[in-house]
Length: 196
Figure 1 (tube, rainbow, N blue to C red):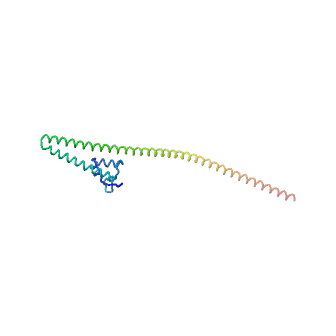
Figure 2: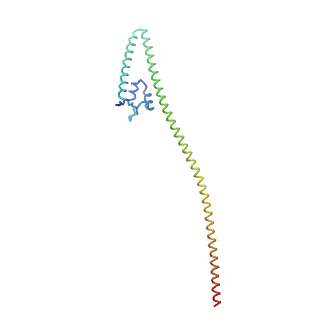
Figure 3: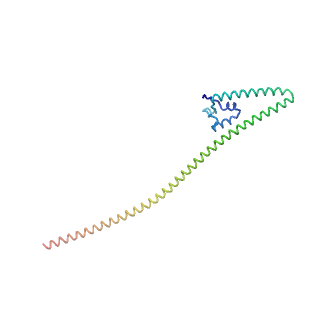
């Protein structure tokens, strides 16, 4: 299906709504469109819809021109002029009411989109807070494990010291025994010499 890219202002004119309403509907995703690199908002429409809106706008313009012509004829007399002015005021009021209705409708749509975005952000924040809580818990557990490791390292140092002391004691005992053995050998040799 062929698409037509028109300015948001033209679409606003075709649909008899304000430019702000069109922008809000584009932001909300109700109307397909975008803000161009030139800073202008555009609407993308199927050609059939564009032609339908253009034709409807032309028909509406003809009807309004016909009404205006009839109102101009009414203005020729005093009473007619009053009636014509009153009818013009009513028509203007209807147009304003319709514009306000469209504006309100688009604002509600945009509000719904923003609420959805807020909900998604809130969920993301809650998820981040849960992750942060898990990280904090892990940090606490790591600190506890580090304390346990510190205690175990202290015990290990104590055991190493005990082993070193026992090793020194053992070396001292071995030296004493070697001295005793040497002393016995010397006595034995002395005894052998005396016997010979």
